[in-house]
Length: 134
Image (cartoon, rainbow, N blue to C red; front, side, top):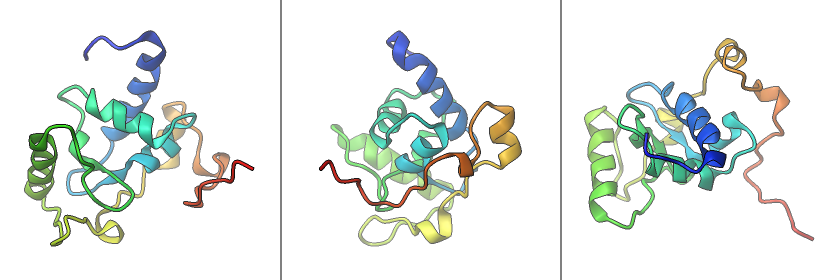
């Protein structure tokens, strides 16, 4: 793993532990990973994927629209699409993945507890709506 700032190392390790559980042929969203990890945002999960070591299946993490997120370099996004396609995941003409079909349901409760994660009922529900600041 590349040298990370100390404050990110523990969080990134937890993110990678979760992402390694996503099976071949399934995907998760950055927000889904953040919710499982706790005290994490989708953006943090994205930064972790950008710094992921080779043994982390980073290609299986996509955005909430079911798309590969744009990157500074075009080859990274294209490499992600190719890897997903090689795993049998279909992208439509707009580059979207059908989350109803390919979305990973997440780890089971026993795995969560064994690895010091909170089970879903202990996390606030993800409504998909950003809370108001006022």
